[in-house]
Image 1 (cartoon, each protein chain N blue to C red):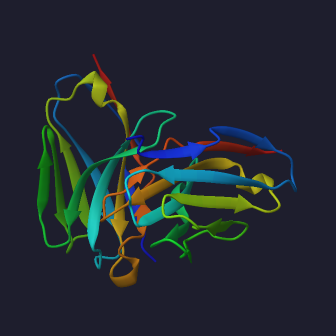
Image 2: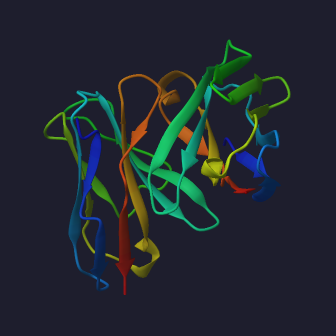
Length: 114
Length: 110
């Protein structure tokens, strides 16, 4: 059974700092790895999706990398802003018939201090 | 374009009562999903559907039933609510692998 872990559970940084969020998964036979953002009391918003054949994806100040062999993914946020404060979740998909099913980590709560 | 909407936003039930949560999407997506989110447990998949008229079990299906009679709607039913079903329920839909989430329903079972 796939298990997804995110460490740390919470992170506080000053505005302008570059930061890295970590995600690890136990089963490397994934189809893709996704990063989401969740604001308090809201649903999830998809940030980046990395296919298993890819090594990284970029969107604006966000860059996500994937290393299947080590079972790790990282989300890099450049020049952090207070508006980046939210909980960030990663999710790994299965393969084959399970490729549309996601296993989520518990998230990292990010606070960017002005 | 409203995306994914969920009805109701909040609900309080007594143990043993039944209710149905409605999810609607206007993006013509084939795939729809129901998750629950609990403190310390993360999001867990309850049931999902790969098209109109189809449903399948996820990680935590016990105590729930679902129906997908119309492509745009996915219903989650609780026949006899239990306090362990107190949670925030999220619906999502997708055409490919990127899932789009609704705002959630906060359910409390007393």
